Image 1 (cartoon, helix red, strand yellow):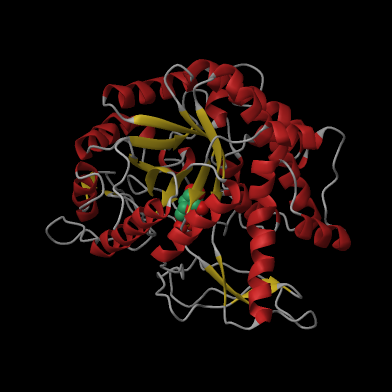
Image 2 (image 1 turned 90 degrees about the horizontal axis):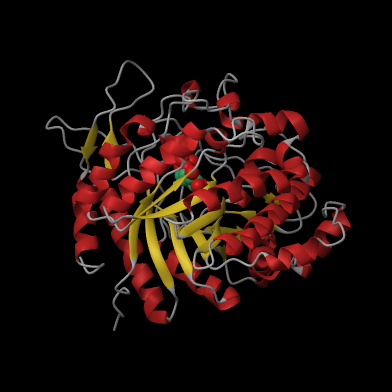
Length: 474
Ligand code: BGP
């Protein structure tokens, strides 16, 4: 029999500043790396930018009212660093703090627990220009100073904090695939950048507990559990290799302050291991998170990849046409392969609720920390029908099956703190514009023509309201 969800379970939804706020240059905000990147022709779907996004900056009151009406317990959002420090450091922009004051106060009045993400990918462009952003160790100090200002200012009202959102994704896209800013392909730099991000993450967590002793902080990690394509030991080894390099490499370092041996040895042999300075491992060990933020979308299946003539490339489906993604891998270690047992979305993301239970169990067994599911959701082409309704029953099905998997994991003994649907309103999908939608609330925003940004509750909104009311039994 299944255990019930804990009484204080945090049912919620999530967003990120760049994807919802808009007002990209208002009230003293500085330019971020994304503000720059989206202006380079061909980088995003139809050149879509977050200049307006879904205008949450001006419509946050309406958005919070919709959250309250739904009975939401928690809202995860990120702060745009460039609103607080337009140039990444230096003088504080009071208007920036004010916006988040208003948002947080509005949430508190409506009994919605804020979860504040410090960094959801929008780096101040000034720091990128000055010293390469994450490429330099100077980022550790600047990220820490920015974070400490937020701890001091919001610590009386915000208890839950996410440090870095998906370090594995923003560094992979920024320094390996070159599909996010700064658009560089350099494997050695990729690992060095990650070392700096690990140190910055640890430094911020270490400071956090001085300012907010009863608060909780952790990084959000995009975990895609690895499956073996077959029972062949070679495929199973390929999945082990993938787990080591794609997951343990980050998670072990966050939790234990050390890099996993197998991955380290492999990288050292290839000349890709990062440079370590004296004291680095002490700092890493001092930055132990209180919980793990788990962003779960899908699992990945692996098979052996020969050293000679193996697949090394990697491409994502950003077309929204099923079957346009390409297999990727590291020759000698592993390569991805489609899983014939799983349905896929139009963007070729596997739909695998059982994978979430597996993710929760693996994380718990290895790290023993509470887990906040900080993102999970379905990106699809949602349409307003003739009656002005969004019939997103496929999303309800997706979320329902994942919530059941969470309850199974809780029954297995996993400590799950909460669940944030990605996303609350529709928002900008980094590379896919407004055509790929995740929201429980539809926003009338498109790539072409003039749109009024009207909010319309989708079917999934009414369904999730009942889930929350019944604490997950609906
Ligand atoms: C996660 C990010 C989110 C969000 C989500 C959906 O990796 O943390 O910011 O974008 O993925 O991704 P996409 O919009 O590419 O479908």
